[in-house]
Amino acid sequence: MANLSAKGWSWGEYQLNENQLQFLVDKKPCFNINYKDIINCSVPGKNEIAFEFQQNEATEDDILCEMRVYLPEADSCDALTKEISERSEFRASSVDALVTLYDLPMIVPRGKYSLDMFQNFMRLHGKTHNYKIMYKNVTKAFLLPKPDGIHIAMVIGLDTPIRQGNTVYPFVVMQFSKDSQESVTFNMPAEEIKRNFGDELTQTIEGKSFDVMSKLLKAMVKTMIIVPGNFKSKNDTNAIKCSVKASEGHLYPLQKSFIFISKPVIYIKFEDIRYIEFARISDESMATNRSFDLNVCTKNGSFQFTGVDREEYQIMLEFLQKKKIQVRNVEEEPKEADSSDDNMDVDEDEEDEEDDSFNASDLD
Figure 1 (spheres, rainbow, N blue to C red):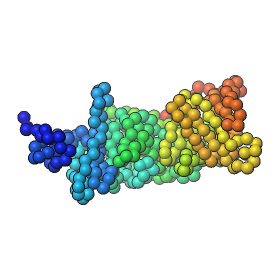
Figure 2 (figure 1 turned 120 degrees about the vertical axis):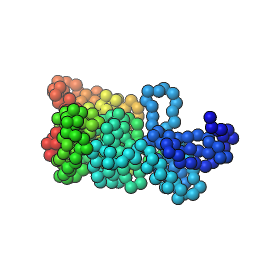
Figure 3 (figure 1 turned 90 degrees about the vertical axis):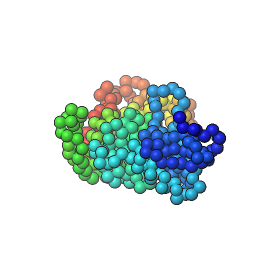
């Protein structure tokens, strides 16, 4: 058994071994980190390196999720990060990937990334940061046409957020041009593709970029792609323009939830909403203001969407009444949404539309 250091110092030296990163105190081993346990390695500060570790969902014990070490020489941080990245599993070679998409325009986290998809995980590889996302960590996905009529956003929800320093990202957002085309080759024999994925995938996958990405997600990650339902704004789009604090974006009323993009991404299930308030919508306010605010009060907190065009008021009110969501105006007493048959003329197919299988033609 190795003679371990027991001095309790919080400083020492490191040593790169074949399978482990070893920390030494007074030239004696203190502890080791297996490369295979590292899922991400980044430089959050000038002299810091952050290690993120695999999480065992089966255990109820406390586990180590992240560790940071300080290096006096800033140049050493980049060199060590690069060395560990090359030795760790999360930097598996792109040659081993089943399929790779290059130069994906990302909104969250921002930048251009290459996407490698493996059997059980996918990896986003950028110029300065890399992220490994286990397929079992993906909870939901959305395909949302932007009101500009040019772009389509794909939002991927994560059970455990990815991290970049102190910033966490519970959602990953990609943005595709509606007319951009993609052609990828699946790195697997045709017989094996048929056995693993049936008719969902072929060796060559071609089509619009967002459609190719959707097919890969559905087949490999086994997640449904949620698309907007029947809601239409005054401009005949699937979303309304608004702001969250200082961030402008779009709120999408879906069949069973709201989602706001781009930053921060906010996802609210209708079943979690206690009530919704319309602010600044009295006759006097509407005469002087061109917009109103939407306050969504949920079981876990509240969200305020400001600067909504006043022409969207009646459209939103009718939508909420149809969904039997309690509505009230700030200037008035709270009232229940009208639940009469006239306002609830919705069949089961329409209610389930959000979870229907995605077709590219739906967004053309």
